[in-house]
Length: 366
Image (tube, rainbow, N blue to C red; front, side):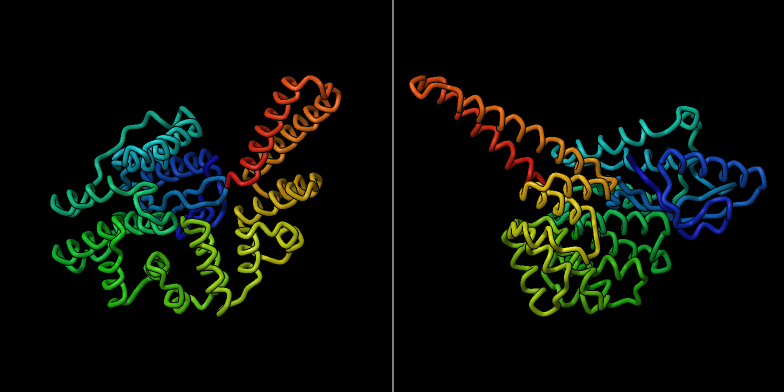
């Protein structure tokens, strides 16, 4: 299930910062766009699209009323994402998002026509379109960085950021975004370091620093070690590399969150289970569920699974219980099988081994 949060919408007919299901967000944008169009007025506001784990999928700006491009949020998000070209291996993620948007939007709000999107110049339009088509999940080597680049570039497109710098400036910035998407972050870092940055650009620069392993420089921008540690824990790295980064950061900037995330990677289930006072993100709640399952405390695992909107946590508990029940049944069967029936015992033991492997996979699927 998808959710939307609006910010900076000046019209009180939409509540800023409220977490809305995508279907509801489509309806309210449609109604306000229609009302503003009839009034002959317009306004704009930013929005963010999240999945049920509260992970950011997309960010943009929606214009309501007479100067608006789309009749509602469904049309804007669908149109923008369809025009983005993905690598073959990442296409499933793009299709999943499109399917979610399609299934969650009421049919009555899908049939309205869409006006063409006015852009400053044909050159500008061409460059932006090419960039947009490269921006969807997984194109960068680090997941958290890619999300930042995707949303920052989308913000660039929607706001026409840096337009005051002229065509040459646009070319430089767009080239830097493209290079960063290919894992070459230095040009974009240099550009951002030399300018007066917005809050959006500071957030992007933090993720760029983390992608290059410059954790201390990232911290200097925010002075929030918990934020940096949480971002480090979310990087798409091998467990070994992530553990080393977290341990180094924890040594100089110790936090309860750092101790928790290190314990998760070290599979220190007792420490994870007994830790209570940290900033709870969806991955940390999932780790807590895993720890209780490993320790055999199903009641606590269920309790923690109920604290998140992530259905995968409850599915993990249910699957764990089903597999353990199967293993218990096989063990009982093994006890009742004659020691002389070697063939039957070997088959049962093989089935138990397979189920134990399934159990391990279920616990550490994340």
